[in-house]
Picture 1 (cartoon, rainbow, N blue to C red):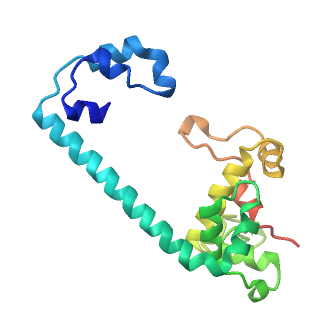
Picture 2: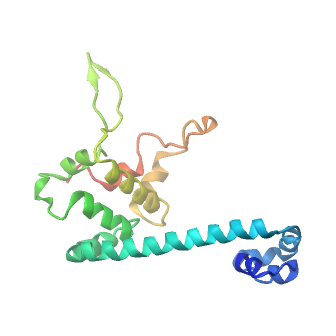
Length: 194
């Protein structure tokens, strides 16, 4: 539709017929929305925005090719990680980039989880338990593990989705927070025990 607008088409009926997917179910509302003014300055702004999007897509494609060249020696490890529910190709590449493929540097899975910042804190002083926040750990690895865990938790019939359901309703929804109890899906993706 935007390309047609840039080409000079202004008829709402013709523009609405270019709709695809779920938008086709709402053609009358779309025709109504497409009625109006679309001047030369609007066309300039739309053209600049579309050119910018195309440039970003070309840059992303170029970066993807560079990452593929660098990750080629680790393709087997990436493909194994990709078989885990919730872990996609990009996440597997990030995990390999942050952790590597040599797990001998971590004596146990708990060491890896601690290094990644996925272990709960243990701040006890004078017999009083204080903050249980996890350590900071590796920020980028923690983010990608959390993202993968949420994806896995929302998949059907997976261990993580069962863990998320076991936690129960979210706390403090009235304050706009949507955290779930003591378990966080990202904490389950990097196990603390072998």
